[in-house]
Amino acid sequence: MAQNSIIKKSMITIKKEKLAIVLKELLHLKYILNYYSPPTNEEGNSQIETRKVDMSTANKSLKDIEKSLQKLNDHIQALQDNIDDENIYFLILHSKIGRDFNNILYIIELVYKKVYQIFEESYHQYIPKPTLGRRFSHNNLVGRLKEHYETMIRKLTKEDYSDGLILSWSYRNYIALEEKHDRFTNNNGDTYGAYISLPYWYYEIPTLLPSVAHECMRIALLKGSEVLTNVRSRFDNVVNQHLNTHRGDLSFTLEEEILEERYNLSSKVVADLAAYSIYGNAYLYSIFHDTIGVE
Image (tube, rainbow, N blue to C red; front, side):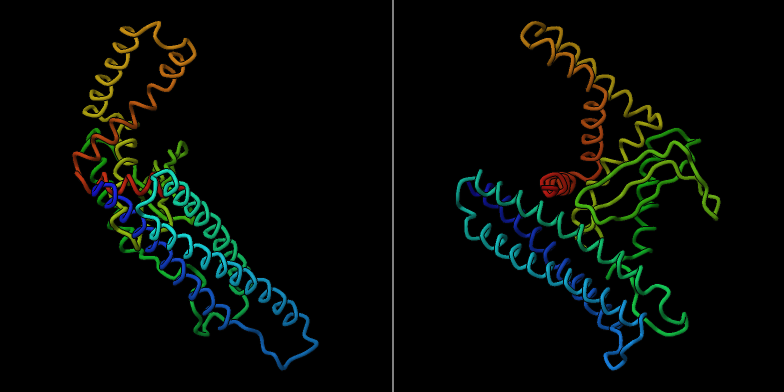
């Protein structure tokens, strides 16, 4: 019971941190809009009138976000107040908060795009102005993480492995891994073959970062890691043996689904095992919150 309470408190803490991040982002957006507010003492200028309309639309979106955040805060407080209630109610409310965060991030992304569209070319390039991008983004941190994960992949793959890794963030609530079939080279001559899009929170909640190792392990498998491939082969043999032993106990359809998804399943299991061997309990903590935090 005590362990269950600790898990729930951890889930609530992560939600509170996410709420604080979005609130700071909202303030940043308000600062941008205030800075670019059109003059109120000029009438008849079509460009200024158009900008007033655009500004009014953007400000309305911010007010809608503010109302949504207030409701979100009430729901998080309800989680706190009902921490000792049945697990099913707690998880339903937790899931609703996750979906609400997804919706809010979607709106924030749209507002940023609108702000960029309105103001990027509106002012002289030499006039100081606030950034039109996200409040907090750290290129040095991304670069360091990229080097760390590339090293991790190289140690598990062939020595001639030369593909790079693109690591960035998005306005999403989950990790996305994309394998680039059409590789490309940047100005420094680096060749990239895989793209990992990190959730919106990762720069400011570093305790969630170890879960990225799962995606790195899957890339290593795709690139022919002998170590991980051998582990996956043993896992496949165990699955085959289990199906042969219990053939007839499962429906034909279920057996076919297991066989069809076996490669994907074994890749995920091996990736989890390898990531856990590197990060230990830190990986379990991060993958738990990364998985359950989507919704």
